[in-house]
Length: 328
Ligand SMILES: C[S@@+](CC[C@H](N)C(=O)[O-])C[C@H]1O[C@@H](n2cnc3c(N)ncnc32)[C@H](O)[C@@H]1O
Image (cartoon, rainbow, N blue to C red; front, top):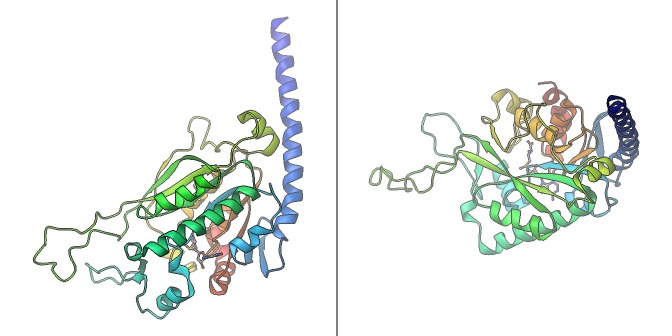
């Protein structure tokens, strides 16, 4: 009698799960048609599951209907100024600005890195405003329980993450990417021999990714059934998603496919994108798509993804690189 009842309860739970899952999938398909065609800007449908729009993120977001995306995975311009016209032109012509070539200790040529220690108070406050506007836009466009994974840098993350909390997001921790970079660790400029035992800053060996969530509607279970969001997808039955990921710098083979100055590795992005949709249902958005690396990672793990990139050169780079990045 008791066994019969338990089996009956299991059947009705399974039937219930079938019905909310079907409703979520139906809504996802409707939203996908709207989101990938949203706005008048030029776009490229990179695959059935990925679209990149040549647009300013804040402008594109402003008109996006409420509750239309399920997760955000993005690597923004950390200090905002490095991708502004003035500094970007200097990067492309190889002439300094906020970009610098790290000192070479083994004769190998290094890629330029943005120098965030030179930001003025005015630039730092503009940075806070920029991330505030982005966070308000994302909070509106995300469904309740939607997560944001936001890359930053140890020098600027306090400011950036604060702007997200002010806009109404809950901070849910940080994902630490353990990566050996070429930032910091230098001896005093012009007096390297004299102070050979001194580094001006610690050599940076990690990258913080802020993890935020739009507040839930009801309980976790209710939110998952209604919106498909609120939690993080587990790695496996035995292993939850974890907040430290060891991931070496982007490989040369990926850089050849997509020579973007801030290219993130597929191996890392795939783990974030997969975790960002707890049921594997929904749409991931990358506002700062660069070379479409997040979109390629999403396609690889079977998720729908849309990106915006405002620079025509990187947009074109992404269109060319997408197919090869996703199959790496
Ligand atoms: C840090 S990079 C992202 C690189 C990317 N993770 C990749 O792997 O290729 C930031 C990108 O945001 C773009 N960007 C800067 N401001 C933007 C804005 N307001 N709207 C859209 N894209 C923007 C820049 O052109 C740059 O390509």
